[in-house]
Image 1 (cartoon, helix red, strand yellow):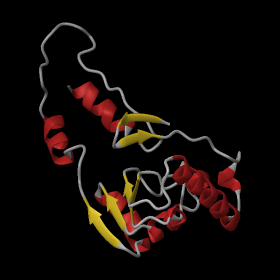
Image 2 (cartoon, rainbow, N blue to C red):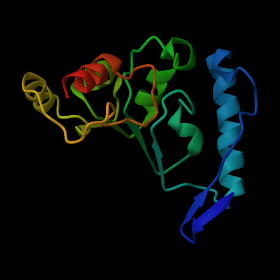
Image 3 (cartoon, one colour):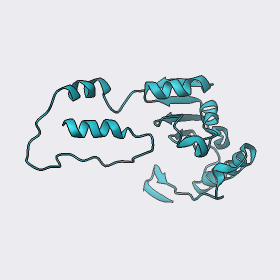
Image 4 (spheres, rainbow, N blue to C red):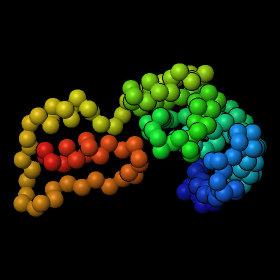
Length: 171
């Protein structure tokens, strides 16, 4: 564990059991409850005020934390084929979170039927309408280099490479 400051600590943890994604639900829940208990012990807490998770493939049951509140912030396409194995219990994350936050209409459509707590859609990221208008009009960028822009980021399987290509070619 490393301290960023006195109020923020970063704890990295290893998977305590290989192939945990392939385990039956009850055994998987037991493993993650054990891991959650170990994490709380490592940071010196018996109870956590809030869990804010961006990952619906781990700690699928938010109750294993025994937190006062839990938030699942879904930023990836929920029904993407990449998550058929690693996210086969992803619906449990939605069902057990006190609040589910989605960032896009397509994600909202996929997760909202399983929400049992509160739900909020906070759009952020790309302005699709602005992109559509921009694609219609060519923009002359300064300079003579072949590469005038680059993108660095976490290229998940659900990343829209066609949109990125279209934006790169037209601009």
